[in-house]
Image 1 (tube, rainbow, N blue to C red):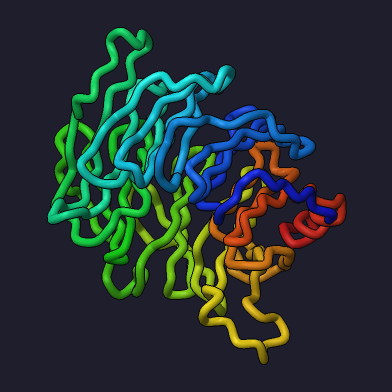
Image 2 (cartoon, rainbow, N blue to C red; image 1 turned 135 degrees about the vertical axis):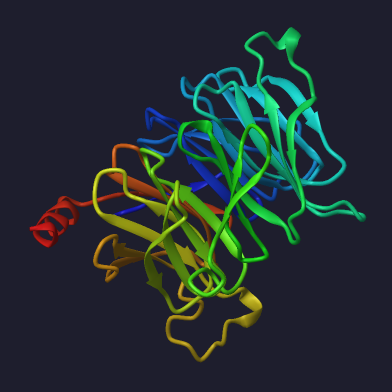
Length: 330
């Protein structure tokens, strides 16, 4: 598996997102500038200029016409994917972190951090088809969570919103009323901050990664814990293959905690686990710093990783990868 190295960011990567067709890859980093790449060969298509702070996440609409980004500059922005034009700015009183379009792209959930005495929130915004009708008004504000909300995503059928973050608790909320419906079990759940969350293709289950050195698979409706994947180091990023029963997990120690005596100093490796058997089945090395972002292409034939080193690495799977999986599933 020979990776394509994509250098377009000056600061550490924070988030990666493929569009639905899998031909475009969007990257976020701490350098203020979201970037779009050709997913096949890693060529940079362009950037979206307008933010004045680190970028924490992004999402792209179903038909790849609009991009939404969340930034430390206390704004979330809507962009025209094709032209790079800034379409609208949602302003907040705290840094915006997680962004996620609902099915249909008419709603988006955006989280804000705790800041200057303000508590974290998850806010639902209506996304107007006609920009003349677009407003900053929130259709729903979810609050009462202690600790930063690192991820907020829509649940099955847009009926719920799932949040996870620093307090190590996953919560499911009613997206109409904001009522808390379910919380993850304290003993079965994560024991340290949840850093990442990735939904399955059919939205029926999701995967979380935590600084407690584990990733966990959950039922999106019942919040039942399905599987646990244990690693050696803090987990910063997770994703699931859309075509095979495996998951990819990435992370690593911060540079200040890496000892020079360790032969695999930092252990900056994307590790693959069998989704059902929970066994580690392989790994891909390459980054010169912790892995902060991971994303499978919707075709399942490749994946991308983003690191503290500022590089995006595009990996095309060898044919042997698929043969191994088929043998394991028999």
